[in-house]
Amino acid sequence: MKRFVEDYRDEQFDVVVIGGGITGAAVAYEAASRGLRVALLEKKDFGWATSAATSKLIHGGLRYLQNYEFGLVRESLKERRILENIAPNLVYPIPFLVPGYGDAKRSKWLLRAGLGLYDLLAYDKKRTWDKSKRIASHRWVSRRTVKQMEPQVRTQGLTGGSIYYDCQCLNPERLTLAFVKSAVKRGGKVANYAGVTGFRCSQARRLEAVFVEDRLNGRKLEVRGSLFVNCGGPWADIVLRLLRQDGPARSIKRSEGIHLLTRRPWTRQALVGWTPSGRHLFVIPWRGLQLIGTTDKEFVGDPDDYRVSRESIEELLRDTNDSLGDGSLTYGDVVFAYGGLRPLVDTATAGTYESSRRYEIYDHAAEGFEGLITVEGGKYTTSRHLAENVLGLVERKMGRKPGVSRTDREHLAGCEIKNLEVFWKDLRGAYGGFDGNTLAFVGGNYGTESEAVFEMARREARLAGKLTEEGQLLAAVVYAVREEMARTLSDILFRRTGLGNTGNPGSEVLRRAAEAAAGELHWDRTRVEEEIAAAEEALRLP
Image 1 (spheres, rainbow, N blue to C red):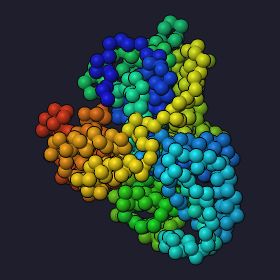
Image 2 (image 1 turned 120 degrees about the horizontal axis):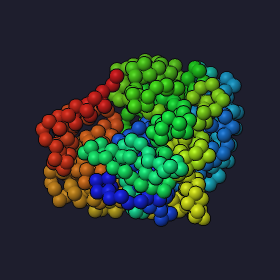
Image 3 (image 1 turned 30 degrees about the vertical axis):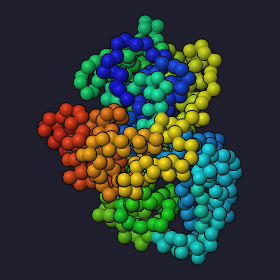
Image 4 (image 1 turned 180 degrees about the horizontal axis):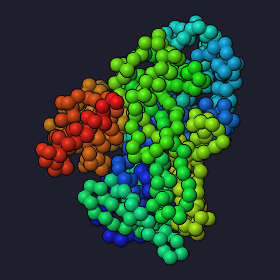
């Protein structure tokens, strides 16, 4: 992939998408797949904010049933199946154990009724392209079985439990990147580190272009378009303010969600628990650690200033100790913490936990700004369908008959795998010289692009070295720069290789990765040290 802003020469686009998270990436892909000329602009790196702060789940939204949002749950379950199909190496089923208790909210009958409805709404869950992706219906297990399955479950008042299935995402950052790559594959132009600084409007207040600053070289340019789609997520209202003071008066409600990676409690499978306040939490085994999440607390302030705080970490630790295990989880058990801000559709409910995860699509023509569309709200799982709805509006505004989406019927770039069993067999046959961990890690994260990573390692012996026991190769660092538009060490660690997503991999690994990137990006010694320092700061717990 190449950053189009580096050689942009006044090209007119049909659609300019502002924001390179999962929503913007999905909109760009949907638009490009329909033959439109598309540009995607992201002020930092693709998927660096909210899209990277997930629970690593592609889920149907079980808890939304309590708000009677049956349409949202059905949409989510359908999109869960579609993502299983189009990204088979990155999305796969995972069982959850939900303990039941004697109180009304967690009773056996309420759980069974809710999960029965969940199964009913997922009536097409077995219609997967690959048989290995088919999801089973829930089942109830006895109190004794729950205790045998999971020692971390509190036994006081325990009546039994349910086992149900959702999907886990191996690497949400790479799934977002797969949408970006799919847009490029269809002819879209994309650029990270390209921040929108303003709009140019005609005298009739029709948007004609955005002012863009290339944050890597300081170049300033105008990118022209017929329609502009604001997918800024938590920054959507800030993007709107760039129009000028009398621009569309919208504000975003933001919710903070954080996650912890800990060494304990060591659960045997994914668990759903409830805090004393009645909010649910997950504890999920992930990459040899325990992923605990999430919080849902209103955030007020500039989203650019957001950081995970020690206070938020301590709150989630208390909730976990009040819900699971022996209550002895401490800050010292936390190896990494990450968080993000969710943009919410504001409702009449009191707090962000009860707020809807629906999305809304605004045409600002009614406010006197023709050519601008803003997307608010939404969730990772439904982003592809959201994009489909956005393109329906885009095509109507362009005077085109809305086309039929095909993004639900084609594999994402790098995910073109018809049969996982055959894929793994072929990969082992072709690259059996690499150890099992490396084959599993590279194959899962890179899918059909694994061949390019392995061949790079074969051609250049220095790149065949493993960076960690998980299996990341030094070749993946170079591949991230040459083929995936990574421009900083943090891009490489967090959003390409996954080296930094389980905490600090150690100074030796950071330096090896930085030195490999330096050879590709022509960093001098000072820049190498700056990149390492920035990565260490991002990895540091508050």
